[in-house]
Length: 559
Image (cartoon, rainbow, N blue to C red; front, side):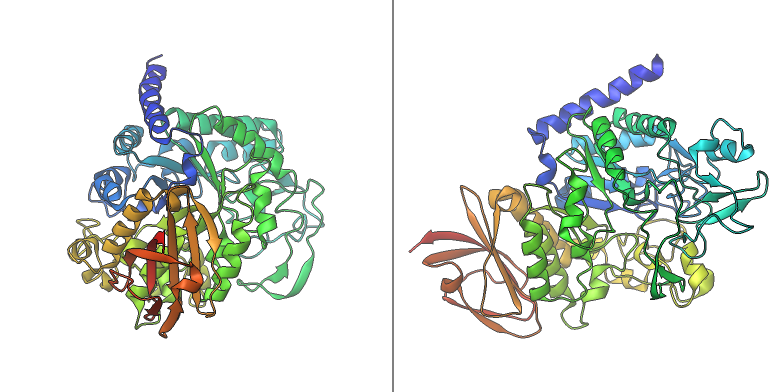
């Protein structure tokens, strides 16, 4: 009873805050999400590992930045075979991250600043140290045997040819019971059997546990892998080898099965029990916008499906981004777009796009594009100061298991997970002791403290950009219209609401270009809201764009 009263005390005021701020059930369409790699954001207790109290201590920074939502990577109890994506207890905070009371405090403090918190939730698999799996593997007659996927050998070999995404067979023999268990990822991450109603009920309880504590929803890890064909047929093999040196496999029977959308609808029903809560999905497998839109169902599956087609544009090309955004924006009535450039599994976008000469202008331009398109943007911690991927230089420094396994051909994902760079001190203000990952040397010059005092910094630009977005009805919820130009290196578009129109011009090249504004928006004058070249006015019809210049301007009136 005491526990129930505590939960009621937590959840009722939090959701009242969410509803008061949003005023409608579609608040997430206007929100800016900020992903925090929990282990690397801020260490409050001097153990070298980021934690929940560290994040709480930085909420004023996030509020001043203009963030609406923070997405926390897993902070649950875990042996950390995959740094939290192998969960040992879904309803406990890992000791290195704090306690449930610390989580509750984070929720309260975030809500008081108008910030929502969503949890990363790994539903496809658990840790092999989870009590469910320990019970399951104890005996073929275990009452949780069918909570995971077990199969007899096929003539002393694995049951079929399915591969783990991290290399080798997706099956591991368990000597105790003489059967193989299935793991799409590491062997220490056995897949749950989502065809078992008991598993579905158990994970629904997990969701309600965190929603009752005030979570505003979840980012679902790899939902496309939740179901497998129960007949276990071999997958087709294509030509060549994949990134780990295995034959290229089409995951026809263990990924993207149509029945997974029934699971999504079940999860959505749970979420819909809680006002304002949302589901964000890591939908990395779609190869077209049409395939991505399937994840929205009939507005009864995901609220937001992450658009990795945008993330995967591999060069700073106006033509390529224009084509992709036009295609994405055609279907906002079916699925609201989600735009992101970086996350914890990928090389940071400034490392991909920077040219060594115009790095700051490029960083600002990419921010301007992502934050002015029609859709929900996701920022990755540190991008607002221009953090780059810093791969380890020695094998002994690598923490990511796949980095150790495939070194030096693939150095893992540590380089995109390094500690947040707060100041120029020895450990960049992240911790008072040596952090779990090394602090890049760049932190001495690229950090929050320096950039807060620099009017031309990337951080200052992000703060101004988010303030412009938050004060503009056109940028928050207006329509999006592509404006063709005669120059294939310039991407231009208009955002427009009933009360205003905003023109966005992006010169995605290292060359100067002249642009006739009257060809873009006829008979109009313009007020510059923001530029990455300190342009304050547009006084001529012919606009001379500098290399990688970005201009965001309000369309004032017809002449």
